Amino acid sequence: MGKTKKKYQIVGRYRPALALANDNHVRQEFFCILREMPKLTSLDRALLQRHLLSHMDDMQGFIQMPDDERESFCRVILRDISR
Image (cartoon, rainbow, N blue to C red):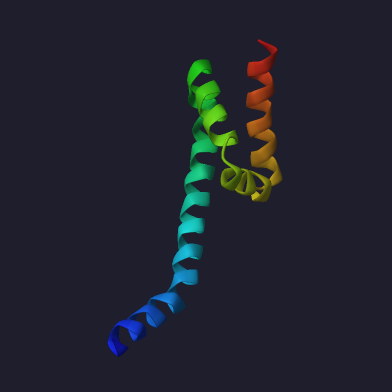
């Protein structure tokens, strides 16, 4: 029983680091997707935008992205809306 408790304590100590690594990976993937959006067809962009914007975790990544990338992403959305 004592060994099991120690294992849980060790895992508990590493969990924040794992969560941070996962958050960074998700954010990097999110940025890669946004950079590729202008190359997609209008329908694919609309579907991808709907999917991305429906996840609050992704929204945090959107807010934290550099201004020039965010402006480019918004231009793609506005261009699609105006059609």
